[in-house]
Image (tube, rainbow, N blue to C red):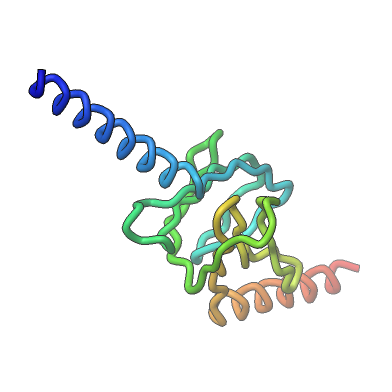
Length: 139
């Protein structure tokens, strides 16, 4: 009888640990539709529906952002994160020189700051100025 009781307790604890692990991996998942192309992690990604999730439970700031239609994506290392203050998952963008740069990801559990590098901004400004001068020459 004692053997069965120990086996039963082991099974209950195993299920509880599995349930907690499943909750931890799903808490920072998000599916969102982005209506325009955007820049993140040095890549320009097309408009579409994206799945965002943590790469691992051991590192909170490592995120995968993948387009569900064409599987284009990028791995991100969020520079900062904090607990979410509201249960309104969303992405935030900065619009610089006509391009959108992903700057923040909010899941149900965390808010992740996504770094926008100076090199990316300078490249966007340079290409924006180049397109303005070529458009001006066509008039």
